[in-house]
Each structure stands twice: as structure tokens, then as C-alpha cells.
Image 1 (spheres, rainbow, N blue to C red):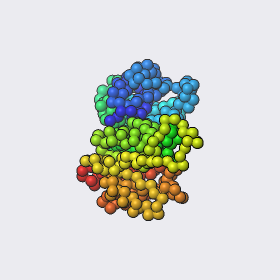
Image 2 (image 1 turned 60 degrees about the vertical axis):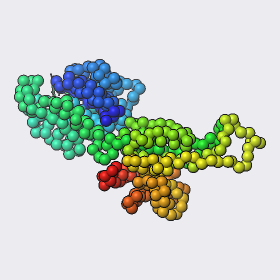
Image 3 (image 1 turned 180 degrees about the vertical axis):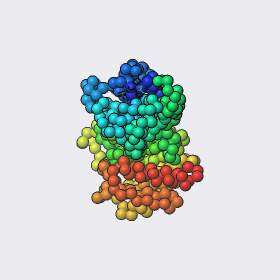
Image 4 (image 1 turned 90 degrees about the vertical axis):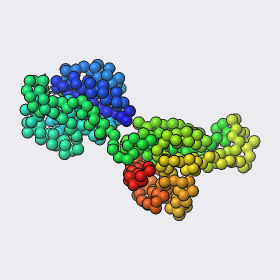
Length: 402
Ligand SMILES: Cc1cc2nc3c(=O)[nH]c(=O)nc-3n(C[C@H](O)[C@H](O)[C@H](O)COP(=O)(O)O)c2cc1C
């Protein structure tokens, strides 16, 4: 379940730093992509080599050292899905609570939008000191989470609160942060996106203006909500979302074959691709010369992916998309939902002022087969994806078979 999740492990200069090496190993074994960020003092207790070997990934120790990454704190902070600091020293907590950025780890903590999990370890008096407790409160108020410290015999010989939490507890806290407990968690979600291209000859094809942005945003959001996502994508110029299995296809027939092969193992299908309804009947493998071209192009129908899934479905939840220029978008979408045996349908405008095609933003209307109806204002496709999937989660909770 944590496969491919991007975790930064911040390691500070405390005696428990040696335990962080085992934590790095366990998180890696659970499938996380662990990037270790070590403070200069951490490197006095354990070596970067240990973490590099256990995680199989680079270890970052300095702001200014790597010419390949001129602003490492920004790139690291932005790529992370979770930052876990273990062991966290009193000093690192103080730096973070003051908003300092005077070393790489502090800068990453200040720059990241990912959740932050602290696993402190220190002498009992340091932990119980009102200044440390004030820093912990400040960070907790900002939404940071803490695991431990727990009580026991400390390295300095004292007994009391301040021991690094057991590694199983830290791994469990990481898991709880990375794997949302919502209804999409663990579900296998298949998303189709983008246009298809239907060859006419060696260089010409029929296609449409779909950019794929909606499907890609849905795939990223479903993944964020803990789903196992496969994206079957027509030709687009977008970067595949991290952690999403992306399969590239070109034609409607290829998309149909790929989607139908995945369908039996799928829990939820979101069909946002703009699949060409027809294709040229006799595509040429050569470029057709202008003088040999016919004024009329003979077309044949493509397979209907959603209709075939609607017929084949057993337990699967089917979410379709309807893009219409028709002023009566809602009734057209309702008709499509019924005809294709869908559970939900997202209707949006094709063409005109509200055009969803090849646009950064879109409005939508979500309808379900039980008569539910939700309107979403025009917004970024990432925002719309979050609203659609939140509604889908609410629908799943009220649908026992799903
Ligand atoms: C042997 C030794 C052990 C230490 N253990 C701890 C510790 O467990 N927790 C802690 O907060 N500081 C500990 N310190 C103090 C930190 O190393 C010191 O505060 C340092 O500035 C922390 O740097 P960092 O937060 O940048 O890694 C220890 C220092 C030494 C010399």
C-alpha cells in the first residue's frame, strides 16, 4: 500500500540516529521511496552511506553541494508526500518552531506542503523543558503530528520520557498519514483520459481537442485518496501523475482493448476520455496523394467502451462523462447514464463560453442513477477532481454493494 510513496526522512544529531537507519530500511521495505535528509550533526553519529545503501536512493546533507540540484530544499519539499523527522532533536524542533531555514532540513520543513511527522528523542529534562514543550505546541497547532517520545532508560543513563518511539509505532504513524482511510483507499480505479487518434493515412488522423487534463487530475486525486490507480491515456502532452500506472494508447480500439482487459480486476471506472465514435474505414499505411484523395471519407463505428462495460459490469461502479454542446446538457447526460448502465455521470459543456475542452478550468454537473445531483462551479481541473471524488466517496458510503 505504500508502494512508490515519496517520503523524506529527516535525521538529526541525536544518539538515536542509529535507529533511523533501521527505520529507513523498514520504510523502504514497505515500498516507500525514502530520500534521507541529514543534518550536519546527524552525519557525526551515522554516515550518509548507511542510508544510501539501505534506501538505494541519494542522501542529501547540504544546501550548496549538488550542482545538479541548485535549489535542493525546494525540489525536495515539493516532491515529498510526507516528511518524517526521526530522531528529532530539541534543537531541530526549536528551529522549525521559529521558522528558521538555516540548514537543509529546516528549509525543507518550512517549504513543504506535505504533512510533517516528528519522532523526538532527547534527555527527559530537555523534553519536559517549557521551551521544548512550547515548541511542540506551536508545531502541533500548525498541524504537525508527533509520535512519541516514550518513557524508558535513556542513553545518558536517566530514566524518563524522551526515548524514540518504537520503530513499529513510527512506521504505523507513517502508514496512517500516507494511506487515507476514506472509501477510495485500496480500491482499484481505472481512469481513461485524453483523445483517441484514428488513422486515415500514414500522417493524417481524426481526433478531438481533449487535453487529458481532467482525467490526469482525477488520477492524481484518486491516488492521493489512497486508490490504486491505472490511467489508460490517449495521446496527450501531460506528465503521468506520480504513483499512477499509466498506459499509453492511440486509437479507440486500443483503448477499448486495454480498458476491457483491466475491467474484471477493477472496482471503479472513471471514463473521462473523449473516445472517437468513428474511424476511417480503410486507413492507408502510405501518405495518400492529394490527387488520389476522395472528397468523402468513409467511416465505421468504433467500439463503445462504456456501453460494453455497462453490459459486463458485476460489482464495478461506472462513472461516465458527457460533454455536450446541447443546451439541455442535463437531460442528455441522464439519457447517456441510463442507456449505458452507469452509476454516475459528470456532465460538462463542449464549446461555447463554458467549454471544458482543452481548458485549464471547467464547471461540471454530477448526476447519479438514484436521482442525486451536484453542481460544481468553474474551477481548476484539480479542484474539480477533488470535488468529484469527494462526492463519489460520499456516494460509495451510501451504496452497500460498492
Ligand atoms: C553524544 C551526543 C548525544 C546527543 N543526543 C541528543 C539527543 O538524543 N537529543 C537531542 O535533542 N540532542 C542531542 N544532542 C545534542 C545535539 O547533537 C545538538 O543539539 C545539535 O545541535 C543538534 O543538531 P541538529 O538538530 O542540527 O541535528 C546530543 C549531543 C551529543 C554530543
